[in-house]
Image 1 (cartoon, one colour):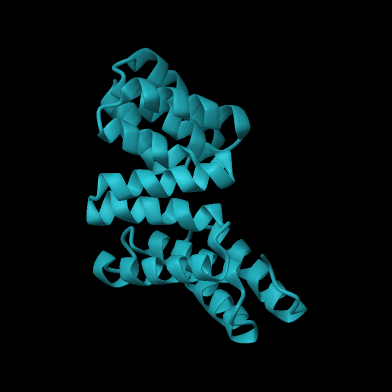
Image 2: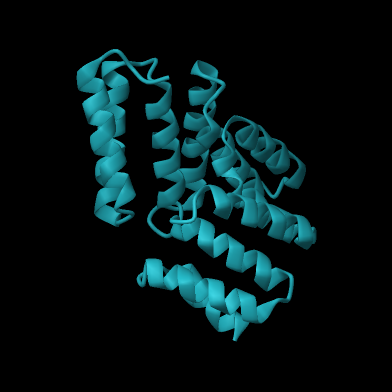
Amino acid sequence: RYTENLEAYNLYLQGRYQCSLMTPEGLQKSLTYFEQAIEMDPDFAMAYSDLAFTYSALSYGLLPPTEAIPKAEEYANKALELDDKIAQAYSLLGDIYMNFHWNWEQAEEMYKKAIEINPNHASSYSILLSYLGRNEEALNMAKRTFELDPLSGWIVFTVGWAYYHNQQYEKAIEVFESALAMDPTSLMPKYYLGLAY
């Protein structure tokens, strides 16, 4: 669910653009745009979901996780309160349960809800499956997600992650190199490429 308020929608789009840059400045600017969009339309569920995502992204070195993650969780839940069909919000809650609360069962439940709505949100679920030692499931999930979106650097990375955890290191190296070819500045493929070597 988007908004009938054109000004709120334009602010939301500017927030999405700034967030997609994944720079400290872009993430900070996106917070302002999403907050302004919500001021214009307090029922704008997608703006809450993207605000939650931005806070989650800021928790990776730009804000203390103890500050950023509770806000991300609050805004993701608010988005779902307004519209329970937002896959991104469920997937983000899955990330929070996996990486912050270490509640594997709740994380899996959130990922399954996200995938039910939109199968493109299966990449983080494949990482959880690897953490749980369900490596074959993780690899199948990652491959399925890759078929849906082969141009996403993050999804390509999760396929390499799944190969790595399946101890198929040559395939992992091939995939991590492919992820780096898509985005040479990405840190995770470089790190895991080193581990695979």
